[in-house]
Amino acid sequence: MVRSTFRLLVVLLGVISVSSVGVGAASADPTFPPIFPPDQNQLPQLPSEPQLYDLLPIPTPDNDPWYDDPADLDSFQPGQIVRSREVQTRLLGIPVPVYTKQLLYRSNDVYDNPIVTATTVIVPGIPWIGSPRPVVSFQEAIDSTDSSCNPSHTLQVGTMKESALLQLWLAEGFAINIPDFDGKFNTFNTFDEGKMVLDSLRAVKSDNTLGFEKSGIALYGYSGGGSGSIRAAELRQTYAPDVAILGTAFGGTPGSLTAVAEYALKAQPGVTGIGNFTMWLGFAALAREYPDVFDPKELLTPEGQGLLADFQRRCVLTTAPSGMYRPLSAYFQPGKSLATTPAAVKVLEDNSLGKHIPDTPLLWFHSFWDELIPPSVVLPTVQSYWDRGADLRFYTMPLPEHVVTAGAGWPPAVAWISAVLRGLPPGPKFKADFTVMPPGCPGG
View 1 (cartoon, rainbow, N blue to C red):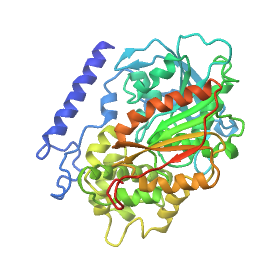
View 2 (cartoon, rainbow, N blue to C red):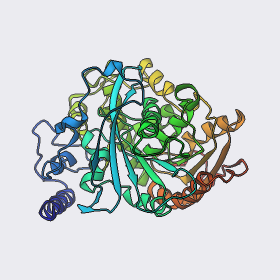
View 3 (tube, rainbow, N blue to C red):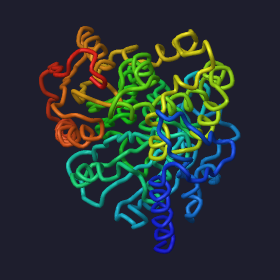
């Protein structure tokens, strides 16, 4: 394992070296567009994370029969366990001394077709006395288009990018549920994310060996993880009323997909141009769930199709450098855009937040300036939640930037979730949605 870890680090250093070369580096794929407009980023094609994972002895989900659908999938109920196994959680290849069990379970896609996906349950060795051990369902910002990026795999190889955020809850003795809520097909920002989160909790509660049948449950997630968390909270009452949730803490996730798509599609000045990558990632994911609507051959130029093909099997950490400062709007065929594709606009509208108002307590935070998810695409949904009676605590953090807010918003979320899981009240409702950026400010 040490040798494998060393090899992974060597390859990662190679990725960094290739990334720093810029113009003139050879492309790994002859179909990849070799020349970009001078006003766009000039990075060559980067190695993908799946290529790195091929160096490790732990098989990726695509090559691991444990993830296979059962022949009689239709006979399983949502949340029913298909199979389970015990695995080792690692951090950069080093084993972590916790008990880890994985469950493969049935869920539903956006069309209510049966699917299977996995969840990972981590239990610390700290005893819990006096009540069932509480469970934090932690939704990582997976934001990727390959199943090797899902936490059920990255926790085993030690590359889950948010693993450090598990530590305080584990130190308190809470169990952690970490679902692959984007499924084996890796699409995101759609309401099947909420179904997969809720069905993971059904699976966790039904596993008699874990002993969580009567455990209190809270949800946490930021950015893409916030999307899975709040969609689960929105769907709980109609999709899984049997799953009780004590509270949901989340942040950094868009309210309106239509508005955030409009923002991310076009060239943005300065740091805000980083946000262009989110639309490439979103298009690649939505083309899987809605292939007749988000059809690359119908909407994109040959160069755009080549870029999108490259983004179809990547994790977020290599998609972002390639997609930033490269607006998708520059790669639409003449006369084509999402705005002129009513079916695409409808998909975005149908999957925007606010279709259901959660019936459980919420703690929601967002940056006053966010280069990926501007407050302008969030605050109208916050207002809608408030006007419709949501049990809401919302605050705009007085800090700029998406990742900075992820770190700064995590400790208050830990404190609030820890309180509600210990039986304390969630606190009074409030809406502190102050804004300090001038109207129309990019990222504001």
